[in-house]
Every structure is written in structure tokens, then in C-alpha cells.
Image (cartoon, rainbow, N blue to C red):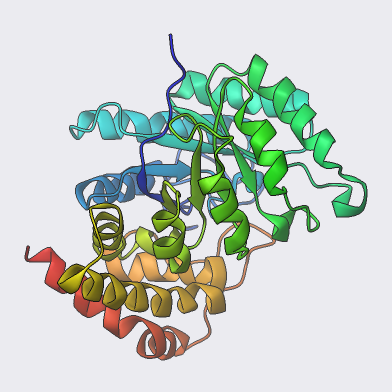
Length: 336
């Protein structure tokens, strides 16, 4: 059987939803060590909202999804709960990636095994970076993924996020080797080096039907997809999905001439401007925006140490600065 490769398109790195402290829950404060319990019904509702809005697939329990703040049981329950909810809502086989944010091969395989049993299609495996760029070699990265991929029950994607791995950056020539490994089917690059995206997306030594290149930034969608990329895994699409999906469809849908070119330029500007909201406010901004725009989730703080949030009046300030244009486009697209 051939290894399943993720479809091209727009994926959302979903935030993890937590129940408010006053809400009734099967999880006692003791069972969650005083932390807010996971809210699987809201997680499922958000997933269905995204599926109905044209989003290609989900990334559950990535960096935005705070996987490192959940227990093993919670992670598995969240993935299986979302899978069940999507199936019941009429979205069987909806693409789900699940994040693996640890540094050792044994524990990485444990996460992947749990996700396979819970119904995830792929594991998004963080490049290990505990020892930082000075001692983490490119050869070591290849060997790490070789050992993980050949033992994983589900295909894996490489997740390169230098901001959380002490500056470790996977180099273009390393991707050529990674793409040749069995059961390695793609990469998410969460950094702003467009040149690396383009080199990997255009590398003639890579079979791009079997190895997808995704950017973690919607502000890079146009240039990355035009030059070999498969799409984006983008937080903005978690609350303004239709605009990002429309941009993706136009960029990959044909020759960019005339009115199509103008519309791509307009939408890329709108998306790039809106992405500045996330650049400024980070995960707190994503959670606040999801609540304000979709009504899902709460404005309560999450799990320690992520106990911050937007200051009073900051939502309206950020909305006015960055989001008014995309709000208008999203409303236009709802009517089409």
C-alpha cells in the first residue's frame, strides 16, 4: 500500500479549547492538577466550522494547540473526539495532522502510536532542538527522522520551527535527503526564510507528489505556492477561513493574468495585513479572535505558563489596525 500524502491546500493549526473554571466537567481540578479541563465539544465545533468553510484539514495539538500542556490521555481523547465529531457531521476521512512536540525517539513514537489509534492521518514531528543549532547537526536530523519514520504507524511530516527549537534550521540539502525517506511525506516550515521554502519546493531531486512543502505563514502563501509549495498551515484561517481558502484557490488555479492577478494581489495584501495581528498578539490573539469571530471558546486564561491575554481595549485596537479589510472580504465570500 502506498503511503498517504496530505492533499494540497489550507490547514489550520487549531488552538486547544479549555472549559471555564465554573463549568461542570468530568475532569476534577485534582485530575488536571488545578488546570482548566480540555473542552472537546468546542474543539469539535470549531473543527466542523472550518470543514464547512472550505479548510482542507486540521493540525491538532501543534504549537498553537499547546500539546506540551496536555497529558497523554488528554491528547488522545482530543484527537479521537474530533475525529468522531467530524465523522458524525458528515466529514469522514477529513484530513487530520497531529503535533509531536518532544525530543526523543522513544517518546516521539509513543505520541505517534497514540495518534494513530485516535484517528490522526499524519504526525507533524518537531525537529529536535534541545541542544540548539550549535550541536544539532543536519546529519543527526536525517538520522532522527529515519528512525522515527520507519517505526511510525502513520506517515510523518517534518516540523521546523526554529523559534521553539533553539534556532535549529533544516537546510535545503537536508530536505532532499529527508524527502527520500520512506514514510516522510512533507514539511511545515514555521520561519520567514522564503528562499528555503522555494528551494525545497522547486528541488528537482525531490518527488513533490510524495513530499509536500507547507508554510506556517499565510503572508507567504502567494510566493510559496507559486513556486512549488503545497499550501499553508495558517493560524489566521482559524477565524477568517474563507479569505485564505479563496487566495489559495486563485494562486494554484491557473495562470495569473488580468483580473485573476489583480484579485490575488488584493487578497494577499489583505491576508498579509491581517497576519500582523498574529505577529503582534501571538497565541493569545488567535484565541481571542476565534472567540470574538466564531463565538467558540472563552476569554479565560489557559494553562500555565500561558496565562496572559489581550489587555482591555486591545482587541478593538488590533482589529482596527489589522482586521477590518479581511472582515469585509470574509463577509463578501459568505454570500457567494
